[in-house]
Length: 204
Image 1: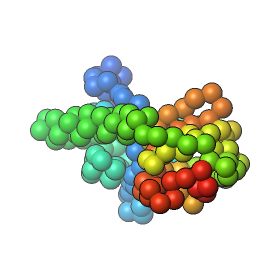
Image 2: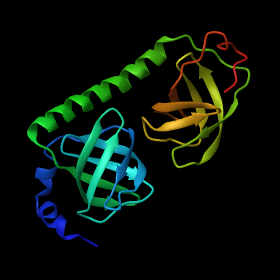
Image 3: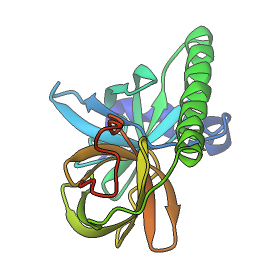
Image 4: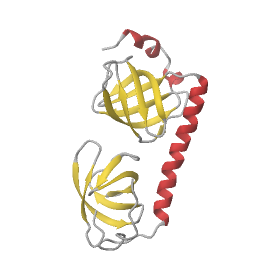
C-alpha cells in the first residue's frame, strides 16, 4: 500500500535520492509513525539525505517518520522503500540541517573507528572461564567462547554476526560490536572492566 504523500518521493529519480553517499553504520534509535507509538530500530546505513533502518515492523510507503538516532539526533522524513523488516527514509531537512547531519555522521564514524583502535592497544588476556553467551538485538541468545579479554572489550567465537555498532550483551556485560572476523566478533564494553577484576579469572 502507498499513501498519497508518497507521490512526490516515489516520483523523484533514484539517483537524486542517493545524491549523498550512504555509509554503513549501525546505531541504535527509536522511531514514531503516524500512530505516535515508539519502536526500537538500528540503522543499516546513513547519509544526510536518508537512512535505512532495521526494525521489528514498518509503516506504509510515504508515511511520515520521526526518529531519534543515537549520536545523530532527531530526523524527520518519509518512508521511501521497504525490504523485509527494514525500511529506508528520505530525510526532509533544510540545507543547514543537512550540514549538521553530515558532521554528526562523520563524528559517529570516527568514534566507532576510535573505539576499535583503542581496543587493539590494550593488554589482552586469555580468561580461564571461556564459556559465555551472546544476546543479539533481536533477543536471541547464542553460546559463545571468549578468545581474549581486555579492559575495554573482548573477542569471542560465536555463530552470529550482528551488524557493526549493534548493541549486544556478552554474559552480563552490555557492549557494542566493532569488528567481524571468521568465526566470531569483537566488542567494546559500554562500561570498561575495572582493573581489580581484569585477571585470568574474569567471568563475563
